[in-house]
Length: 77
Image (cartoon, rainbow, N blue to C red; front, side):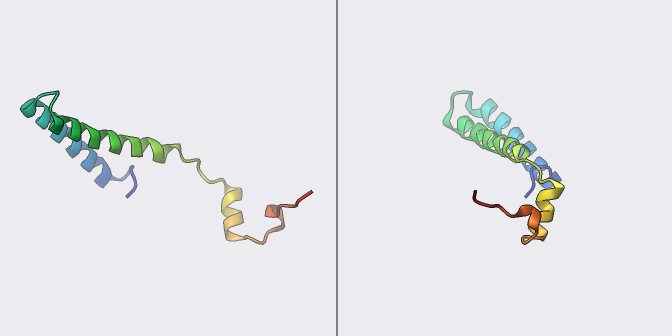
């Protein structure tokens, strides 16, 4: 699932809402609140990770579609 999809964003918002709810019910220092916020942090880390992946250039796509293209050959010198 893409982190930019509506489904992922909805799940992230649900996790945040749940973490707020557990924190208010159990307290900031409870293990339940810590676990809930850990889930939120993992989801946010995944968003950051997916946004850091470099985008493929047109040349990269060309080489994937044409693996034998002379432009992509590597020579040992």
